[in-house]
Length: 566
Image (cartoon, rainbow, N blue to C red; front, side):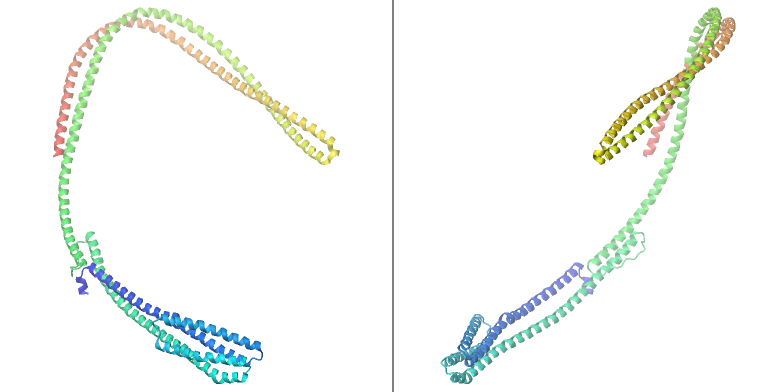
C-alpha cells in the first residue's frame, strides 16, 4: 500500500483495469483453447468414430442375417422358400457393400485412421473374401438337389467362417467404443482442468479486485474527510485542523491545494474583516456628515421658503392694496355720480311702488280664481280615473271568460277527435256519428278562432284602458301640481304686497340719505389715493426681498452639492 500511495491515482486505476483486462484475456484464451479441444473430441466421437462404428454395426447385422438366410436356404422345404432366402442373402450383400464403400471412402480421405483400425478392416475383408465363395457354393449345392452336401458344407465351412467374420467385425466395433471412451475421458479431464483453472483465475481476480477496491477506499476516504473539513472551514470554523499530505499521488496534491486554499481563505477573511471595519468607520463619518448636511439643508430650505413665502405674501398684499386703492378711487368717482342719480330716481321709485301695489292686488285675485278651477279639475280627474279602473276590471273578467270558452273549445275538439276515432273503429255503423263528430270539431275550431279574436280585442281594450288610467293619473298629478303652484303664487303675491309697502317707506328714507353719501364719498377718494402711493412703495420692497431669497437658495444649494461630492 505505501507503493500504491506513491503512485498517481490515475496510474493505479489504469494498472487495476490493465490487470483485470489481462486476466480476462488469459481466461478467454484458455477457454477458447479448451473449448476447441473439447469440440475436436466431440467431432471425432460423433462425426468419425460413431460413423465408423455404425458402418461396422451394419456389417454385423448383414453378416448375421445372411448366416440365418443361408441356413434357411438349406432347410427350405419348397423352392419358393429357398428363392426367398436367396433373395434376402442378395439384399443383405448389397446393404453390406454400401456400408463397406462408405467406410473405405472415409479411410481414404482421413489421415487420423490408426494402424489397428486398418489392420482389423483388412482382416474383415480377408474373411469376407473367404466366406462369400462358401455361401455361393452352399446355395449351388442346395439348388442342385444335394442337400446333404450343402448341409455339410454349411456346418463345416460356412458356419466357422461366419463366426470368424462376426468376431472381427465386433473387434472393430469394440475398438471404436474404446476410442470413444478414451476421448470422453480426455474431454472430462480437460473440462475438470479448465474448471480448476477458472477457480484459480477467479481467486486471482478477486484478490486483484479487492486490492484495487482497498486502493479506491483508501483514496476516497481522505478525500471525503478533506471535503468535510473544508466544508466546516467554509462555514466559519477556522480552527479546523486539516491533515498533512503524505505521498505523491493526486490525493496528496489535493490535500496540499486545500491547505494552500485555506491559508489564502484565512488571509482573505482577515483582509475582508479589515475592509469591513474601515468601511464601517467611513460609513459612520459619512452618515454623520450626511446628517449635518441634511439638517443644514432642511433648516436653510425652511428659512428660505419662509422668506420667499413672506416676500410673495408681501407682494400679493402690496398688489392687492394698490389695486384696491385704485379701484376705490375709481369707484368713489362713480359712486358720486350714482348718488346724484339716485337722488333723482328716488321720486320715480316712489311712484312706481304705488302702481306695483295695485298690480299685486289684481294678481292675488286672479290666483285665487285659478286655485278654484284647478281644484274642480282635480276632482273631475279623480272621478274619471275611478270609472276607467272599473272598465279595466270588466275587461279583465271578459278575458277570463274568453279563456274559459277557449278551454271548453279545446276539450270539445279533443272529444270530437276521440269520437272520430271511435266512429272509424265502428266501421259502417259509425259513419253518421263520424259526420256529427266532424261538425262538432269544426264548430269547436270556429269557437276557438272566435274566442282568440275576442281575446285579442279584449287585450287591446285592456291595453287602452291601462294607458287611459296612466294618462288620467298624470293629468290628476299635473292639476295637483298646478293647484300647489297657484297656492304658492297667492302666498308670494301677499308677501309681495307687504314688500311693496315697505319699499315705499324706504324710498322716502333713501332720499334723505343720498346727500350724506355724496359728502362721504369725497373723503374716501382722497384716502384711497394716499393708500395707493404707499402700496406701490411696499410692492417694490417685496420684489427686492424675493430676488435676494432666490440668490440665497442658489448659494446654499451649491455649497451642499460640493459637500456631498466631497
